[in-house]
Amino acid sequence: MGLVEDIKGFFNDFADNTFEDRMIDYIVDNIDEGKSLEEILNAPYVKNRLNEAERDQILNNPEIAQASLEEVREVFESLKKEQE
Image 1 (cartoon, rainbow, N blue to C red):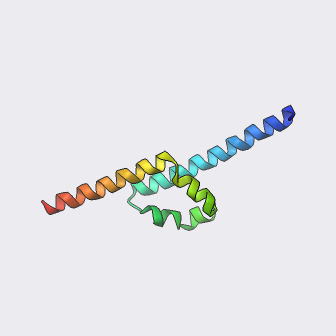
Image 2: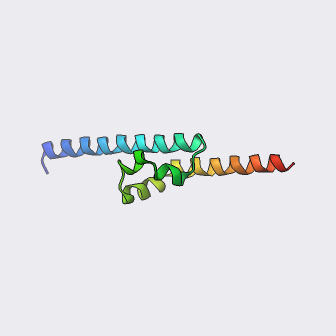
């Protein structure tokens, strides 16, 4: 591979990573706002930008998993306080 192809590949990877980072931020922000992961992934904004395989790949991101876990904890803590 030549230098030009290497440079093009680098910028394509960079653009892909930036796009993925924006999508992760969008999903995490929506989780923080209390939306369910299912609701977020079925939102037109996400569905118009990611195919099913890309959505699955995003789901495997540790940032998404951590945000989802924190949201579940908060829901359970809230329910526990309501029962006390």
